[in-house]
Length: 108
Figure: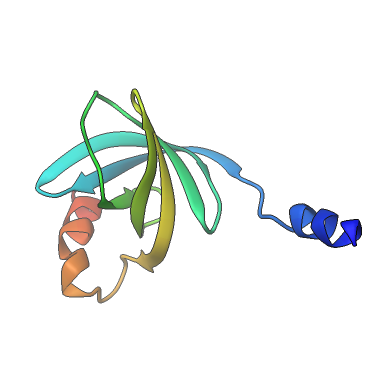
């Protein structure tokens, strides 16, 4: 019975260290940030300045050309932990809700 719990813990996705430049969009504000670690379900971001952000955000990864729709789970100082809901490539057509993310990606 205990083997079931060990198996589930071993298959949890590991966070990959990235340290890539990104932009976090929250409402009408844009914050320069660095994606420190990421997996398919979670992401850890360091924003460039202190802010009071909550709720749903979009993170634009400049190097990979991806936009992540995410929800903030923890906020401590300038370190933000996110739960990723969906990811989208910004190279082609994008939904209207991601047009701002595509514009941010194109100007960098």
